Length: 109
Image 1: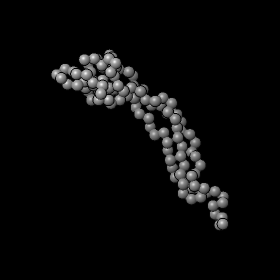
Image 2: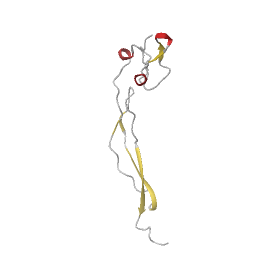
Image 3: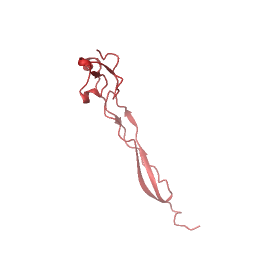
Image 4: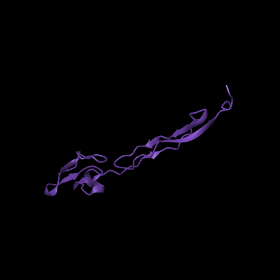
């Protein structure tokens, strides 16, 4: 068989053709890890893997609670999405604890 026009990124069991000895050979990028690629995979399907690239972290937000325990968050954006089985993106959001200390917190009402 031939992989031509049937290649799939990632792991996709629908991308296969009959191989030697009636075994399936796969035409997805995961086949390189499992060793069951179609014979013409490299010629017909191989694309250079591109791993995810992310930008820098943005600033931390203010504390979610003006008085007492709360949380802060920050995020970053994907600048280059992963392609052809490249490394997936890392976390794009972070959260951490904080304590709100607004000047009015200690005042009794």
